[in-house]
Image 1 (cartoon, rainbow, N blue to C red):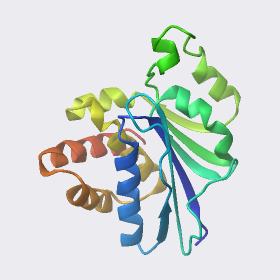
Image 2: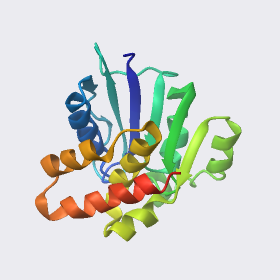
Image 3: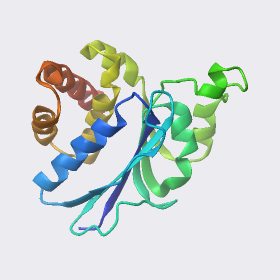
Image 4: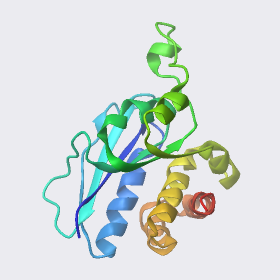
Length: 192
């Protein structure tokens, strides 16, 4: 099997690391070699965070170059726009409509870029954009955006929910497992 490249982009505090760990757990269970990059960017709350997940029959490196990502899973709109050049021409952008002000916007030194959704649409990429934050809140926590997006990814790629739920049982603290499974199901059922 050829290598599939996934970029997970967001801001610190959104759970990008857990999302990459969940993917890193399920792919070997499915018989694939998998490589995950270290975090690129500032992992503290509010900083841009990017992780690379690559899986296939044999994966040599965890790094994804510009124009090579099969999927970009974007937890925030500005981050989706910032990393769009990494998406393949036939790649898929899975994004949240959520907007989180970066530090320069919070301090007033600049404004949040306007019309990002229109600019992304004009780029011609294949995108599915959902109000993932509402689904996460419905599951019981705004922090479940990451797992909602993984539910969307699973549905779009035809991966069964079972390995994801098993990974949640292994990697998530017991008191948050049910919430995360509900969040995953909401994301999975949000795509038709």
